[in-house]
Image 1 (cartoon, rainbow, N blue to C red):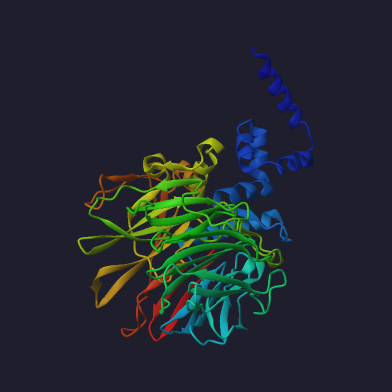
Image 2 (image 1 turned 120 degrees about the horizontal axis):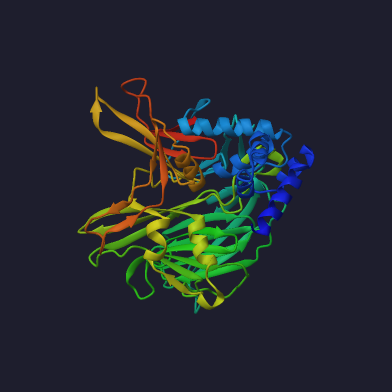
Length: 538
């Protein structure tokens, strides 16, 4: 007999002899992996794990991709019960209540859905912004609505309710070339309080930025993309047929973290992978060849020097398109931002875990004057594991599609989702509204689909032989086989699809739903006509 076995047995018996309170205190300091291993040691410890609400709560949080809200006064048993109720509701798509929101609609509406807060205003000329905080029965969040003042010439905005942050971007002003000075665009950015609309107590008053043009122009056609992540603020400015620039600031101090200025076709989209790493999507290779790619840039140290895309940490390649196919556009969607957490004053019992993020990357391509879009679903940890595996000597590495894509992603023709109402991803979930092509009794049936890429929950469901009529576990390989690609594209990352058929319109003249969005506690269904009508389920 091996002595280590006797020694481990002796230690196990010593643990069993400890008072129950001491054992529970020890278990409270273990993570979910250690707790599950402990169940295998002996029947006694298995029963302690199974019968302890605090231990079960720790395990359930991990499986559901959630983390504890430490400031709540609820007991572990109460939080466990709420968490299980919430999970059951999402599995059945059974909402506790619904409400209708009818909002003015205009040709140019700026809006955002973030952390259960919806905000919008009309561009140009709006003097106030309307905001709605959606309730949560399971997390004790009451509904509320309020208005805040705007700058008279607000062009766009973003927000982070956890930091009471609203970022307003003034309408950019084109300053013509004069003497030997190039023409430039002046952009002013104002960090404000989301509660009051006034200056944020922890921020600089204004960030004043000048973007110098590559060529003179009398017209100003541009797109803005804005994202906040902790103390960082990123803005991508694309000036049509001229230039694009990606900037990252510390919005609290105004310090420049990154400037990347390239020809207009190069940078198409960006997202924060972590507070230290930026994910940048392109469809234009540095040699001029159109080829979708994901660049990872290091933003851990401030720099006023302009950063080129060639200064990357690594690059993730996509499947190879046929040479007659032209990639046109790329968009990255992910919500919430990395390291995002609820405002401590909210006292929520639990919230989404900071590592539980899905990236949905949509690429539009053109072939024979036909436009097609493809969606790439990839969890943040898949990208991060590849980045963290790099040593200083292997940085600036191009990661071939076959190294990361086939088993770590799902790649397929885009399922139905809006490209305007872009709140279709939250945490590990993606939402889709499927409308049947054929009408029955003059009406098209509509089905809501939730795709969930939470790998731990999928493993538990498979181990327990999970079977539900409205839930399907997808483990089969997806094969994209069409003329767009050099070879077949195979991907096999598991996911689940939960479905629910929606009730038909209440009257023949009532419009059907057009789009859908998702947040941590709610599902939005939209009817867009002269008014934007939201049916919110939570």
